[in-house]
Image: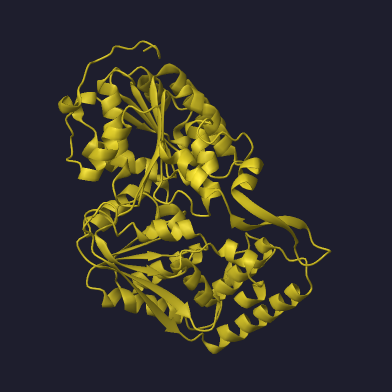
Length: 497
């Protein structure tokens, strides 16, 4: 089907038939944005951004404007569109054919035929690709081929994945922008590290929105900086943000091209969130190692020339001790892990929290070692659990989700970067943070996997904290919705240790 062959089908607002009934705010956003060439949908997690995007695709298809939908999303979320969202929300009349990009099948005859058939599909062709794959040679080539062949609405789901202007994925998707007839970005946390995160996201929609061709100029227009030295005069120099400025101007720039709504704005009747902390003392053998490494790190800091990335690495090492392990060799990432101490009270506390909860529980872990240890503990305690992290192949993750949602498993244990975005896990009403990621965005996104439309119970969030350790600082920062990296830039790093 030729990209520019277009037959206008006259459809009025009254004629559009939703497959799933929209909530009032969803219908308002749909009606105000459906004909826009570009638009940003910044609805808080759980408010149903995907439905709005799918209704927009159906509307543009009904009116003859598009015959294709491309969705780029973090790994796993793109599958959720195909398995859950499209069947629930996309009207049957659009005759959609959906295809998920599968890197492992590229080059095979059967999959090549599927890819070619999608381009020639007579209805709405839906191509779903994880954002990590768009920079591969094969992913990049097919994406361009598809965009050139079809009239397309291109959606970047969780658009903060392109917030870094220098990242390869950002550059590639920004270049692909010119081939897409309509464009949308969506995120529940569009600026997790501050307003500078807007730059690349809105440039994908259109460079004309912000009007800056240089990220450096953009940052210095909306922020004031001062020159600093890392670790004294012998360290490297860097620009440190002192304050944001001209933010009302930035808000005006994006106001006509975006919508930002929270659950409070939408009067969504969701039950409250309750936060709890469970403290425990480090066993003596873990405390001994923790104190020794902490003291070594403090000596390093006193010597100067220690940048923020190195400080974060040191804090990570201390956090690993509180979780009961350390790398076998700090200089060799493939050397494996060693347990620290004979007792693992953190695992015992996690098990207590789960067993005390009457319903289903989500457990978020930063480290793969944590997931390994918990899964072993669940097996020994005969607790039905599913795993969702980098150790689980993509083709097996849907089965894990189904088992948890349908009640075959009581516990969902995973990593926020694998399962903390896009998934609907509102069947759980207890969320345990066994170990926290430093990313504020990962924390906010993972919290709202359970606290979203369909949740009927109060959601309890439990942070496990080893007394008098970095755990306390990490949890305080994240609960206060603050970026650790930003805090460290302004604080004396020694205070964190």
